[in-house]
Image (cartoon, rainbow, N blue to C red; front, side, top):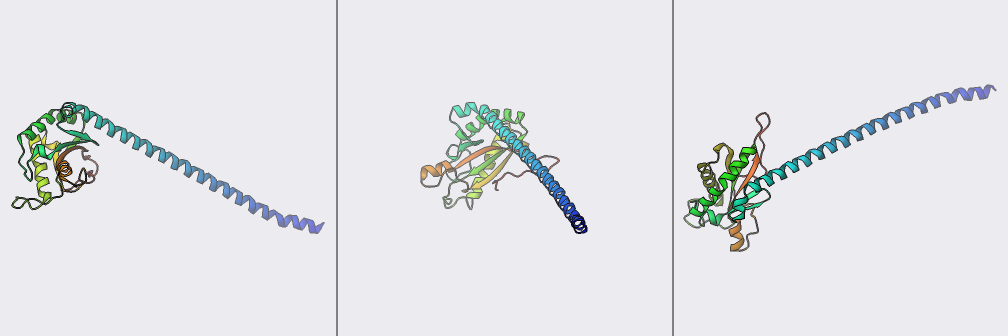
Length: 218
């Protein structure tokens, strides 16, 4: 009897330790469950914010496309991925930064719809100049395609401002021969790459950091 009573007394601490371990395990599982639920909520919120952002971007593109209905219908410009494209052959002669009369008329057709768009959206217009990959002809005033694309973008920017767009809502960017619309394989493809594009970008927040447009150079 004494032997059995001693065995029972020795087993009591074992059960106490087991009970503590189970309590700790349950607590750990609860913490893990809370962490998983929090992670799911955070992921759901991020997905909802991303969806809302994409929907807002799509709405802006639709609004801009609707504003440009007339020049688009007339084939004066293209509109892809939220960017207005104007052929460099319409705007400038080869290796030149002087705006042609036809190009000035095309830009004039864009001022009213762009003005209407800017009135309803707190955004900026980025005018980007692009060239093909061929070096400039000997005697050109610019050392390379960077300089030519920059001046062409500035020429279009200044023309749009002169025609009525607010100067604090338009800026120029230069990409030179980089980021071609199509591979530079022949005269036809290079003609497509000599272009000017107009795209919308968010305005920098007055209270937050300045937002940078990915891929903008010059």
